[in-house]
Amino acid sequence: MTGNIKSPAGFTLLETITVIAIFSLTVVATLNLYLLFFKNQIQVERQTTVQTDARFVLNAMMQALDIASIDYDYYGGAVPTNPSVLALRTVQHDSIRFRYDATTQVVEVCQHGPAHQPCDDLNPSMWSPLNDQVNSPVEVFQVWVSPSSTPFQRDISGAAFSNEQPKVTVVLRLTDRTGENAITFQTTLTSRVYER
Picture 1 (cartoon, helix red, strand yellow):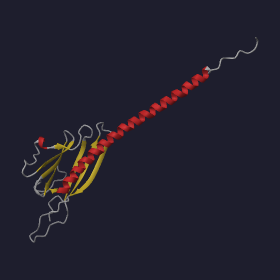
Picture 2 (picture 1 turned 90 degrees about the vertical axis):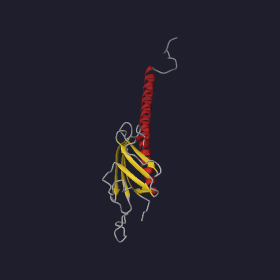
Picture 3 (picture 1 turned 120 degrees about the vertical axis):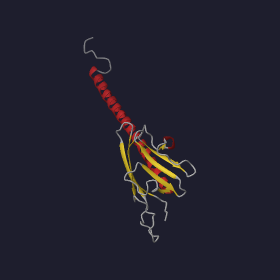
């Protein structure tokens, strides 16, 4: 037999190397997309945790202001600029206090009625944390009260000095545990208690 010898059916070495290269590139691209998606998912979860904690703190303050007003007596009649404690008093004279503990980076609340022991700023067992200090520590907690002195005082004729309802502006900055995702919230809350 004379003539050309045919090779058995199959792939040449060049075709095999080309397929392996294309497959490798596809696997690497898919793996990079998966890792990018996974990294973004973790970041979104951290941001969601921070936002949830911030909303919880602000919602607790909003609910307290729905049933209470600024306790001007706690401050001696005039609220200082950016007080360390936000003191509220309900119509039943229950006390509600909010404060920021910089050592643990949490916003805390103390809530007691007149029959109970009043809120003690120096007794940590009376205070409950509102945010998760591990997953979303608070970096900034600032409070401004307007008006700074009670608008409920009356002059000699019995007319009110001011017709302004007390309001509280809160600035809250939380981060995730890595410190990468910082979110600042600012809102103004108005007391729903009318003492006039």
